[in-house]
Image 1 (cartoon, rainbow, N blue to C red):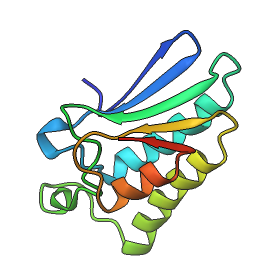
Image 2 (cartoon, helix red, strand yellow; image 1 turned 30 degrees about the vertical axis):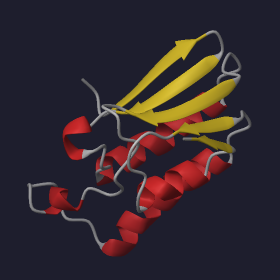
Image 3 (cartoon, one colour; image 1 turned 90 degrees about the vertical axis):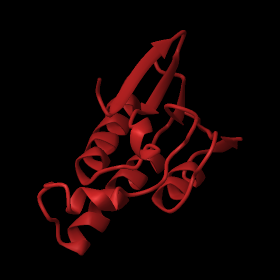
Image 4 (cartoon, rainbow, N blue to C red; image 1 turned 120 degrees about the horizontal axis):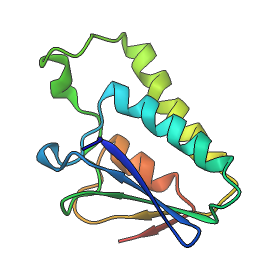
Length: 122
């Protein structure tokens, strides 16, 4: 299963952060995937609304800091922040309404992701 899943249903695109074993903590690579997903959905005329949620009963516990010790390539702090900012700006620039469907934790960068949406439903 992919860490970022996108499903479509009647004009609604649902973006699911799918790492329930880490409370949907987002790795550096996933921030890039989110940014690309948001840009792709922005250009899709069939998408009328975007819902962002997390798998397994949690929204997002923020950046996955354990990835640094688990073998993921180290990234300079500034580069890491650029990755997060790129995803946030891509979300902000979406022409479609965006909804954060928050269950469970939404902390750190996960809270920023939720607050970057037009509407937060908890």
